[in-house]
Image (tube, rainbow, N blue to C red; front, side, top):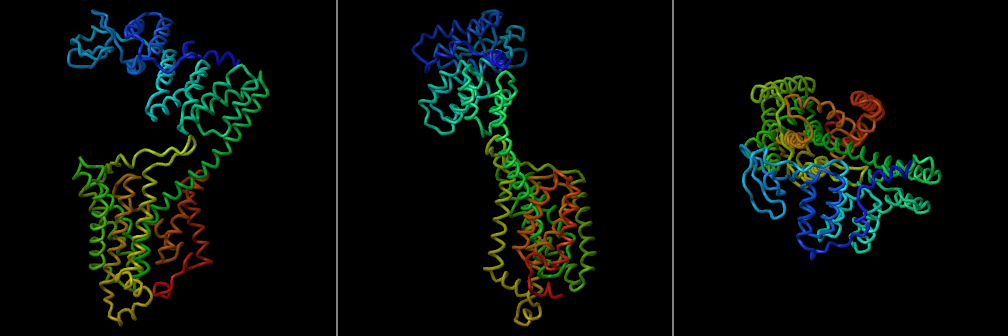
Length: 537
């Protein structure tokens, strides 16, 4: 059965077994005659025509076969010319497929598409790979090698061996080696088949998994099936490791968001002893600032985040200072009243956003440089937006650490945290420090909102989803301690991602909350206890 299947997928004609590097000296008329055969009704004639196009060695062969593969070749019914078309009002603009010269405009019924079926598509894909294996472009050769791997045919063995012998690039050599091994797995030599399975063992290419899976099902060759099954088990073990790495990556990206959301809260809570329930709305305002910036510069989306980050910091920082000067300063020493007051502020800000922007979610565009993913291999891919957010989190943390350790404001904040009365007696304007601290914490939350806008919907309730998590991070890491906030955020983020597949997102959060409750029974001051007014009070 396996050999019958192998014969069924052999879609390339015998000419490929003897293909050499294309010879451009062959007469152009050979290509013209071969292309003309593509219009024949017989698909076997079309197969022969494809073989002749490749054998012609004409540099136009790649473009012609690519157009044929995409269904872009037509025959002019009147002149018989092979053309490509461009749709226009009332008909088509035609271009000679061989010369590239513009021809007359024809009506829609004036041309007929040259037919192609699935078998021919496989032949054309492999033929294109054969033509491109000897390209001067490394990228083109790599793409060709991977195309052949996805469409293996025993007729390609000689060509692959020739390409492998003269290839210097390591990635291309690996693809060619795997392609050769995949072809030998479906060959007739039992020893070569076992050796090929050994070569493919450990590969993270999904195409290889399919080859090994088919080999493992061969009941007429128990030795091959056993070797393929062992190789698949080895691959599954590696996939489990990569799955673990991917879970950790997603956990760290969630932790990065939690850190950006919680670090400002840790500062204000540690210095001022204020339970700020409006902190989540600073995240929301930062995300809406991103939306406004992108609306103002629609033709420069690629640079919008570089404008949105400082803009969000300034906007949310000023809002934070306004809240502190108008409400919070009247309630120092009464934490429960600050909780109620800031909860009212959060409702006010949510309603203000609904009034200004509507209650619907607003679209925020992800720049191209943050889109897509980096494929480590077939089992592990890392999305660029999360990679950038993790890096951004680290930069914000380092910058904040420098502010607290190297600037006069940081020194004054630490002094007020440790002993407000002593700091005041030494001439530090504690009221000014409180206002700037609240503004700094709110500004960092706004910057976190910019990052969050690249991961989730931007709406009036965005901040509510993170305020509880932010308080959990602060309590778990240690009130007012930056390192505790970082470690706590990353720990809770990774723990959430590990539990979600087994319990679901909601239950995972509940379990984390229960863990924190039990943890603070043993360590009321969190992972990193901070000495000072916030603790002593």
